[in-house]
Length: 346
Image 1 (cartoon, helix red, strand yellow):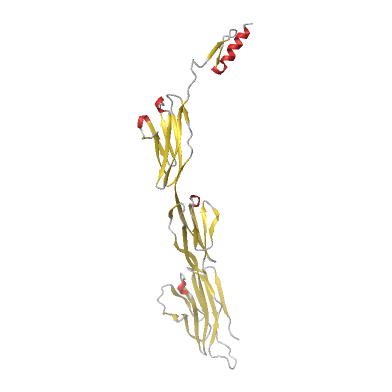
Image 2: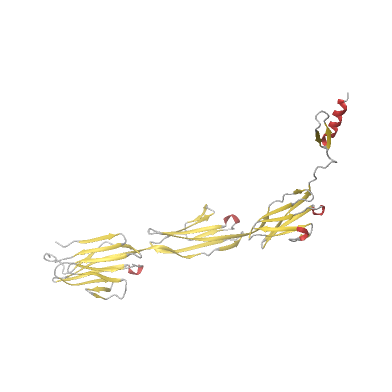
């Protein structure tokens, strides 16, 4: 009966045990036994340990990788520093390969010469490689209406599946299940961060691309502002644009500059503010805010108008003879008050 062969795969280490001893041959049996074991799968970067369990009457032993001899007994034939001898005695012949790479994939043979005949047992090592994105589109800046193509290429074994999705802001409707994501006539609402995912049975690799979409300014409708003479007045303007807009303020056809006639202009991102610290009669009127970037411009008009405070000429005080208090009436009530006093006399 032939001696058995055992293969064991542990977490992070693949170990092959080949039990060989002095055979019992029947008449007509081959002078050389060649055995092919099941494939062993190992991940890139792990450690592979191949152990050939020997037996009595073994005279010579060798480990081979394809056509290259790794070890012949204690003699190292391989120049690869990752390959080393672990154990060599009458019972066991074990070698180790550190940091396994794709180039280590292939057939390995344990060759044993006994006093009676040679034996070989072979196994095919399959190296799995986690996915790695190797070619990705750079961050892009495009104008609204352009056609955009995003590319993502990855290596790995098994061959990784590649997919695209819009990550931020999240949009499940904008995705792709292949290496290319096409976005025709891109709008400002498609700007954001896009994620490429490469995955296989081993791991997942992800990388992102930021897509910036330039578009001309649009300005919110201006809100007219009423201010009392001598008080502080503020006109505000808001613009949506990429890149951010620069602001200009005009009174009729005359441009206003910061500090002009005590007026302060303050820009902060998408907002611009025109401040009057002491409104005069000459300040009342129509003002125009213009937002400008390299793709265009937009404007809105804002009216600064006067609010008149009540004065003695617009109020009427009626003395109450019984209580000694006074009541203030506006001109709209004047006629009614006079009529009421006239009726009370009769």
